[in-house]
Image (cartoon, rainbow, N blue to C red; front, side, top):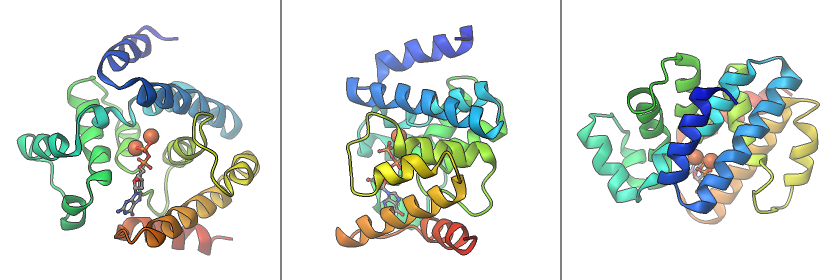
Amino acid sequence: MKEELLHIKKELSKKLKKERFEHTVGVMYTSASLAMRYGANIEKAMTAGLLHDCGKYCSAKEQLKLCEKYKITLTDLEHSMPALIHAKLGAYLAENEYGIKDREVLDAITYHTTGRPEMTMLEKILYIADYIEPNRREIPGLSKIRQIVFQNIDQAICLSSERTIRYLEDNGNKIDPMTIKTYEFYGGKL
Ligand code: DGI
Ligand code: FE
Ligand code: FE
């Protein structure tokens, strides 16, 4: 592994809880595999995978405080839905604490939870790698998405965003408009 990546990995192994770190490494290698399949830059994919949840090193309350401290603008929905905050915070930390300058990598981190329409290949790869990495608990439909993603990544994004929306609805959670846009865009493409 490149020296810079190794260094970041070591830092994250100290900051993240064991399970989160294992997930992180899983996303890093899954992103690399998808980059191989779809001809994306492997190093960028690994960097995005490694740092995608770096904003999750502390509690939701602390994440919110950090966003205020760093003047990261949050929508009203993000304020009320702590699970979403770590994406924007993570992109900020990746840039300012881990020295990542690549805008494509930073954008992939920003949109890894909700996705967005017209994602770059790197953004698609991180979004779906986060969903399918080997340590993810089995949920209905996951094995199908794991297969399909190596044939048609857009279809896999459609299926995973659909599942996320259904899961959030079933649990009475508010859905971020961007999550819906992602589903409509990738669903509409089929
Ligand atoms: O950080 P991870 O757990 O690895 O994965 P993630 O960044 O995709 O975050 C998943 C969490 O985010 C999960 O609890 C569901 C939640 N989430 C995803 N999209 C939305 C959402 N929560 C709300 N309220 N609205 C969304 O649109
Ligand atoms: Fe995440
Ligand atoms: Fe994740």
